[in-house]
Image: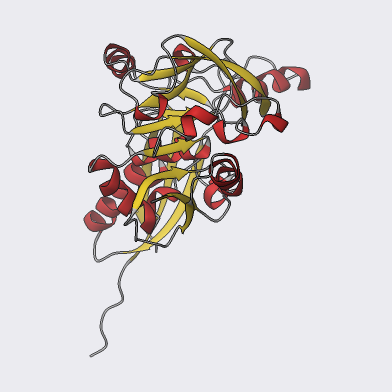
Length: 90
Length: 217
């Protein structure tokens, strides 16, 4: 009997600067937006999005691995927060 | 006895540090490739400036996982003197050997100029050649030198005298004008300015000499 394939998960980790940390690049972009004529921008903060495809036996394991990855490598908790969006690939 | 200089892919001040130590101060050095694990017989280790692993993700973030740094963590814990210059300072914070983080300069510009610094040597082994409140001039050259840390950690650093170098005129928006920090034991120093570029009189100043000469003197 063929072994059942290991499930594949897709994740998107959003890393953003903590609210207390000044974002000079975001400020510069906000100023440029005003020069472009886009009005009403109250806040503009620049972060990163990291897309990951991961094989794991189940969703809980995938979640656990991605939490470790996000917390220890993708984000620096001194200056950054992260959030994780995870789903099984269809 | 020699001083180890770590070389990552993307380091670019490793040879400057070698020149300062060997050429200017007559002190033997040994390059340590990032995959090396042998730190035996070294009286100090320097993490030089540059762009380790392209500074991908964050400055110093990938370097933290280099084999040589696993050994360096043990070396520092055993009291071995460690000096992180510029990108080396960023690596030390990413490793957690020093608290906080170095972030994008407030101006968004890469700053490259001579800066005046105020020294508070405290227990820092690398700064014992300087007097308290002495003002020195060292070059800086960085785009990410704005030090950030939680207020409660800053308070602890101040209380314990770990803020050993401050800018006289803040060039990057760094918290509390911080240019350099030591650990509690005083054997680890991280600083954004470049002492190795201030060891040869032909470069206009030699205020970095006493720092690099501190170990093995």
